[in-house]
Length: 392
Image 1 (cartoon, rainbow, N blue to C red):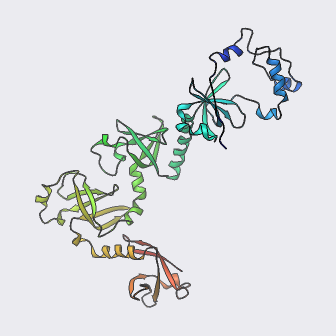
Image 2: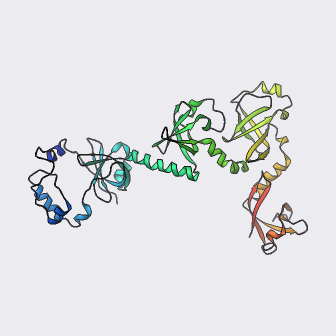
Image 3: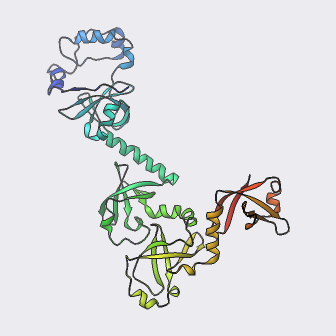
């Protein structure tokens, strides 16, 4: 059930009126219980009714569980909203454990959701003015997210940031609307950026690269993200599919470099053209062209993508493996085992024809072959020409 929110206006001089008396900070005239004396309890209120208020508090059931206390500045606490001060635009809250009052700027709460929902939320205590605690949701989020990025650096977590500003050497980006990060200009995209201003306002995926102590900023990188996901994404490329690419530079003497799908860059070699000189005069950096993948070469974790404008020049073996991926992946099939050649033949259940053979040494599957009726294809890697499967 949602809490009922009471709107009130706080008197301008309430705290001065009650506490800032010339005779001293505490009221020593109130007769305390022996237990409170032993605990060093002190009474702030100087009004004649201070003794009556003290007596009333001592009659409250479970009084010990709701005694207010000072909260530590700079630390994070869970609070819940009680009311809203229209004059100062402050939300009056209670710290969950101690019931201490904490005032939070209304502007820091997202559309007032934490006021009306009654759900606890986190704040960082920013100041203590005459015993009155003030907290900040934004500063709390900054602390929490700073710790998150520290963990993300260790875990290699991928996350989103929004680019908000262009500065010397790169961009300032915001993580979770609360924590600023730095993106070097060369790490904000897969390829060379020619219009840095066009990136303002973009949300991109990044990974933490390092922490710069001098600027007290985490350095994040879109290129590190691309390098991390490339082994998986490269296997999703389809031979025979038409992609739209964009020229990353002017035509070179080697051919034309083209980026596509935001993370890949490939080369249309000069040998792919009947008249490269003539074609190169008709295109420029930033132009869009339709391309096809002919082959992908892997060398020590690095990928070289060869492209063509002509679908008839696609490598036939790669084209066949792209078809295997579409036909086989995630499906179950009958099979036979060729003992002499030590290979499994995947059989089309409808036609009975062999689709493809997989070389598998008998020693690896001797406990399963002939004991299971079918196999399920888990993965088809077009680049490495491998099929992952399991017996079912």
